[in-house]
Image (tube, rainbow, N blue to C red; front, side):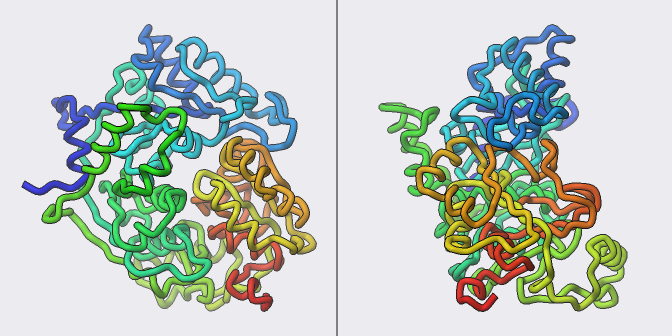
Length: 469
């Protein structure tokens, strides 16, 4: 009987089925962060339960760490208790910690793949909703809550209701300055914020195969924003080449055995999915959100919708979003003044993202009155970007160049906009008050964000690079 790759990975990790119908799935590795893990550590201590496999568990300081150069524990006072608790809990449980001064510190979803902790066909658990970012390498990753995390740490298994399967085929060739971020936003616009609810999504097709691994991670990162339980791209030669030589990847004979296995990880030709969706990417233009959820998306040349023109069931949400964002129906976003631009987060903070933004910025200046920030996703990304001179490109243009961390994605470290500001951001969520009270966030790609910072208003990067914006 033919099987999907999801079914194969699930079956390979199935330990048992609970009486309540949930499956117990073995988790190969965990990546923790300081916002939630300390609470799980406290629960384990109260219950007198040890961490079952500390050697397969890694702790990151990312959500609350300051991004200011020269940072320390007290630079962001509101995060100091989380950082200290993570440090003590990791030491107590003999877990490797990537502390704020570690040369490999960074956002968990960035550090785990770049160090080779996450491998094709493996399972991965993170106390963060964007766990499926690492699906770009062919891993099956799940976000989990604090109580759930304590159970996983103690048992090395996760109790899950078996998800349904969904195939999203991305065909065609992406145009100039159109990236995985634009593709992901368009998918969410078409399917809605609950369009993949209860499903594990496999992304396939010629457009996916042409994406660099980092862009595949961006695609999978946004899977949660349409309700997906997890999402991944089947591994291929590009995935294997990307993993080779990374610190926690297999070595020697184990590498040979691993790669032989990874090349078998694919969906069988006649396998059936519960749902399928196809997107032709050939005519896709850069995308940007206009509203307050990631499905409220326009092509960069589009205009804000009129509530009277949408389905009655969505009318209230559109009216509410327009009110919060301070927009009128029929408004073109291009040309709208902005106050702040943020380039970073687990969605778009890897080295190729920074290269793409720097190529737009090089030789230009941030518009007067715009606060522009670049925060690399890991200390390694920061180090590599500085070796390539990207930090000088951004600094010379007037950008803030920060230390690695989650930063403005959720503002947990104090990096927030001011009330009423309009912000173009490469992050994954544009919810009300997400980046600060009453901040109006537009999600976009690194290139669109960079072009906007230079223009001082929402810009079509294709025009900016032609000298027209």
